[in-house]
Length: 208
Image (tube, rainbow, N blue to C red; front, side, top):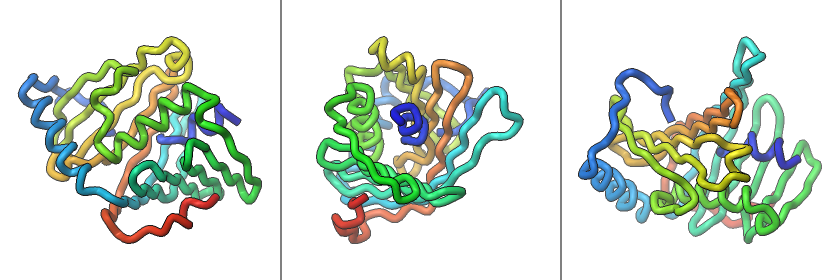
């Protein structure tokens, strides 16, 4: 179950290309500031997403889609709608799972891995993730986008995640894609689209 959740979560960046360039110190400071300014204005966020699971032995990526909903300070839900119904809610220190009507719960505190992942996911929306001591972070420029790469420092986490990449729209300073590279050559890529910011979202939405 933990493995299934890990690869379904977050879970948010563009394909690497020859145009990728490292940011200067000044550019990094400017980028982080712009993200922080925008994130402070975000009270709620909902967005559609398409997830692509790439596995070396498959000729075609596995595609799923759904909706992600966030409400400050730390309510987060991933709703997978196609080709199956599966939802994950991060709430009050727990992960609530609804797998086609089969419900279960997990205490985030019992898993350092999920605690770190949850912190990074929430941080990617709230903008509070650049000073995380758990990761080595590098910054790059792409055409119309900025890219932040997070490499875990913890050996246990590295067994599951080799690198997390967050791609930001340069103008909006919000995340448009997440890429989770596993210890093998497999990866999960999540593209976010149709964002709605600061619409009213009731807490009941996060009941799984």
